[in-house]
Amino acid sequence: MPNKRKLFKRWLFRIFRKNETAIHELNYLFWECTWRCNLACRHCGSDCQASATVPDMPIEDFLNAIEPLQHRYKRNTTIVAITGGEPLLRPDLADCGRALRKRGLRWGIVTNGMLYNEAMHQRLTQAGLGAVTVSLDGLEENHNWLRGNPLSFKNALNALRIISQSHLAYDVVTCVHQRNLNELPQLKELLLTNGIQHWRLFTIAPIGRAVQNDELQLSGNQLKQLLQFIADTRKEGRIDLKFSCEAYTGDYEERVRDSYFFCRAGINIGSILIDGSISACPNIHRSYVQGNIYHDDLLDVWENRFEKMRDRSWMKCGPCAKCNDYKQCLGGAMHLRDANGKILHCLHRKTR
Amino acid sequence: MFKKLQFKKRQLLRVLFGSFTATALMFVFQACYGMPNEDFLLCIHGQVISEKTGAPIPNIEVQSNANGTIVRTDAQGQFDIDVPFQEQLGLTFRDIDQAANGQYATLDTVLNDYTGESVLIRMKSIRNAE
Image 1 (cartoon, rainbow over the protein chains, first blue to last red):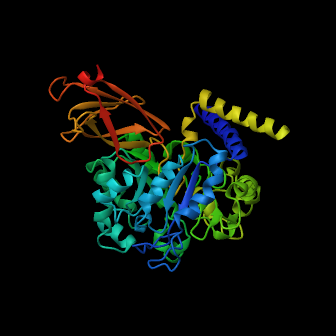
Image 2: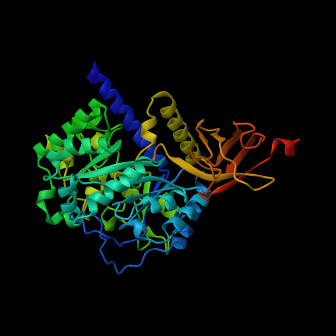
């Protein structure tokens, strides 16, 4: 009986997903506002550099690009996720945020927390900041190893203490790899001790700098250990923990997240990259770029392109061609496809 | 025409999903590399002063009409209140200590498209109001 219920829920979800794909409302827009970064993380999937020669995108360019969206969507239905690089390196970040608020857009940042202190918190919340995600990749030694900076852990934890005591929606993200997998229980206690309640775990995709480091990839058994840890912790109920929506997890689907895996890249999620490129998510291979704000209309691109993201039948190739779970997974997340459409890795296959 | 009808049908289906299948979580999603998209609050910063004298008024109760949150102004008349993210934000200001800091008439106000700047609230003393 429970199995029938599960199958029914999954069937219902697939109808929902098909409907969402047809509607494809742009609800979540990334803005890669800078390529500058104050860290050089071993696993970074971005193409950013510590001293990027690429200039930050002027806020006016971004605002001009999103202008047509305001005629298409109701106010407050779109959230802008400001990312980088490290967005806190932009001295005009609060001004950018205020300009977005004035246009009825909600906004938040994804940060490493290095520069997030009380003064920064005041400045940004007074500009309407609503949500923050901070990276914390293990206990001190492992976090600093991955981030390549001895102060990184201390600063990130300090940022989280400030944020978790405020009104902001927030979560901590931890990239799990071979070195920090076994310390997740201790990290959980550390977060709870510091009043941090929302936690999200990732694996590291073999893209960007992570390609060069095998230690960052989990084996099948390690991946099972991770998913079981998430399932057990969720059952325990002391902290709001979830697995990121980065991949389909087979039998773990109902136990590791609040909802099913659904790669919404190009369906509800778009991005404007540092050079003006219009893409789905910033970490998707740049060969899937759909246009450029400097010579295309963002709304026109959103409404009429992105075919590869909205019809994923082309993903049914290679190992996906014979996979029984394809109809539920639809070929996995877009960022795990290379320029030729080949899947880089499949977590579901790893756990079998 | 057909396209429009199809779109309306899909929108209707979407509403039905939200209403009948308890799948609200499906609508509040988070991009895998992005920040949370739910429980989104705004913090309103402001100061309450006397309309007549311009002096800050401490101990005024500030209530959000949307979520019922209540805070009080500090000695400088300042307050911070967390409210749901809405275009129109209704706030009520009440004098709860009566004569202790002067008597002021209850004030209902609506902020449109709050952008994060500090707001200045001027309350009328009851004598002035009369």
